[in-house]
Length: 118
Image (cartoon, rainbow, N blue to C red; front, side):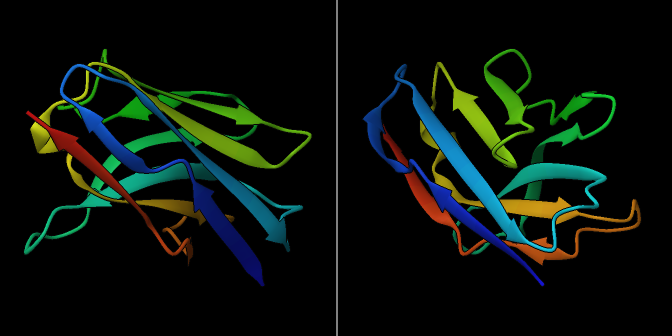
C-alpha cells in the first residue's frame, strides 16, 4: 500500500507563489512517475504536471507551463510543485498521485486547497 500526504496549500493573491509538497510512504520501492492533478469545483480532475522517477523527465499541462515547476527528492520519496505567477483560475484542490507501474495513476493523496484571489 502507498500513502501520499500533501501539504503547502493555502490562499494567495494573484501573482503570488505557493509550493506544494507530497511525501510518499509504504510500498514505494517501485516508482514509475509521480504527479499533480487539480480539480476545480464542479469540474473533472485535470492533469497538472508529472515527473518520471528514473529519467527525471517532466511533463506539464499547457495552462501551467512556464509558471509551475515539478521536482522530486529521491531520498525523501517526495515530489514538489512550485507554483509562480498564480492566477485566480489556478484555484482548485490539488492532488498528488503516484504511478508505480507505468500504466495509470494508482494512488492518490487526500488533496490540498489552493485559493488565488484577484
